[in-house]
Image (spheres, rainbow, N blue to C red):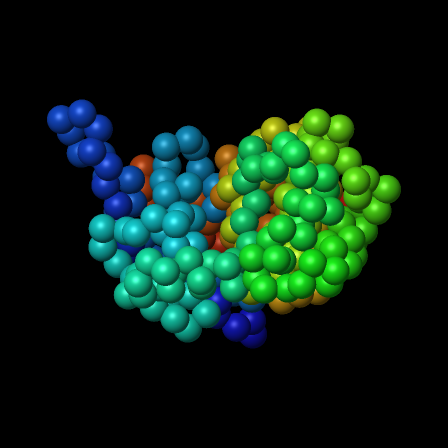
Length: 237
């Protein structure tokens, strides 16, 4: 059986909107396992992005706890949470979040430098991971010279470069066509299988559901269903 990577209990979060309070998470219990792609699905406003922010140390819940890699995340000081994310988490976002002035290799190497890896080694590792996602011929292109699918592959390479145990992807395919969306999911599956990462993907893209190991449906701040996909189909390039 896969090893438990995240175990969250009783997560609640509310936002103040004008004079009213909107409860976005309502006592959520959630877990994720190494070697699996867990898909969190639901309509806009269902609480998916707030959940992933609470699980990854980006936003403190009002109530509840998150055990990540056996550590109680929200009992740590802010600096310790930042260090946990740097050491153990990779992030992939809908908007790519690439630096306009940096080429693909520099985008990935920059993260490795933050981890204390020397410049030469960082560039070697960045080149290797970019080649692994099919960008060996795009190493020196800046974001303006890359397609949407290529930008997302740079973002995936950046997330994978430090071999994180936890990878969080927030709407990673919503800006992509079907072919590039399929490629993104294949790369995430490879990260789960080959690197034993626990991968949590937040999406409302119905194309992805069949390719998850596990699908969690959210609605109005609650988990409505949670089921394993017995044999996810392989995803072509």
